[in-house]
Length: 214
Image (cartoon, rainbow, N blue to C red; front, side, top):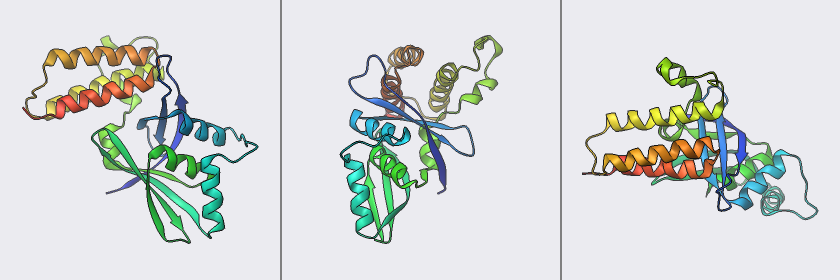
């Protein structure tokens, strides 16, 4: 399996959010993007480091950085290694202490930013959950409009295309097609409203239904 280097390109909260945020990662050598739903504290920790904001007292991830450094270690990289039952799993590699620690992606990324360490995603995870906005070009012209360059519209079309392709590649499902169609409509609405947290949850529910056995 291959690791793909990514960078943080977005962090947003939807109006209908219950305190969750959508963290958007993008591969550095391509256009695939990976949306991950994270909690508010982790979003705050990531945003603070990205904006160069230094709190008067260390946040949890700042404290972890201090502990690792004082123990003689440094974070060399973090990697999102698996997607299982709609949950992402990550690992933090610590040089000097010869450790590889399991972590939530949000915590791993918050720490990686503090060490200026590279962030990776396994290609199998990107293949399963990533989206490529530029692939909208292969859709029918009737589906396109003057706002084709809009990232949200691209993401919407690609998510729909991704779900349709996933259904074609798999055997008949037990989930009623009407339910999946309803979820796809809700997914469209969530993306149009920039409710990325809800969109990610609907995407995961569609994937769960289409992968269930008859």
